[in-house]
View 1 (tube, rainbow, N blue to C red):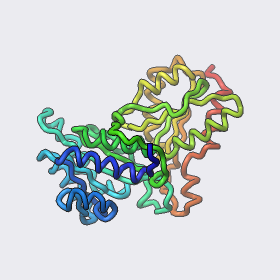
View 2 (cartoon, helix red, strand yellow):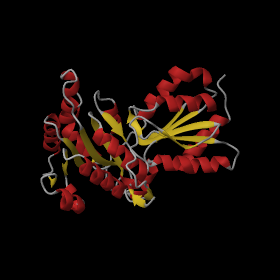
View 3 (tube, helix red, strand yellow):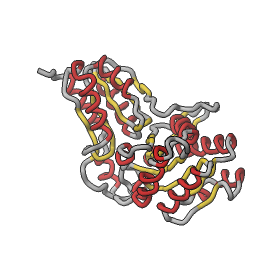
View 4 (cartoon, rainbow, N blue to C red):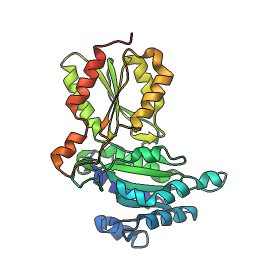
Length: 322
């Protein structure tokens, strides 16, 4: 099992899938420049750069999907998706439904998001909740290279449009990746650490912050179960609910703005489905309702850190619902 960075794991998934299916094409902002190996193996007809025109890129991808191709498009930074909202939300997300299921729209959109490079507010904005709220779209955000490879393979094979968010702070972090054709199913969470006192749900880089928090809590005799969502839509409610039913406590952590974030949906479902099991109020930790600073230290302060996660879990374990 070799160690690959998340960036290389994505490249490996693209290579394997393009070998498997000649209908897969890849284009976008700098993809041919960044991935020379794909161009060398599959040629300029299947791997090509585009102008910096996100609406045109997404619109072309929707049209390609409608004709039977399976496009993978690279939009670079997540805020650039603002320019492609009509094509992704109003076309890709709705056309399969409007056709009565007669047509498939297999389309994967790659976009980097989150803190880590100090690229400023117009390049760093976690917008995944926008697309979770959009009917017809699927959304994934891996926390490690193995899941990045497996989720991308599943996304490419899916007949629906998938938003694939890449946490920029994890892009060059290495991790073990299976050599085989392992596919990680969309909609299935992973239990990253088992525990019995509090459930902590997260995705992206904050999964690793939650792991660090769990190690801190373990020294105090508090056992935290860490769930890595991996897929944000569909999300694995069954795994989360089963964990909360055991622990009776829930902390939801993500880097994106806490207001109307993915954590709010998770908290609402748990409150509806497992309220009787709760021993304390649900806690959500997220970024502030503010644009992200360009300063690296300030950017890191934007992200829920292990100490804050541990403190939230500690408070829950000390209180009970009256």
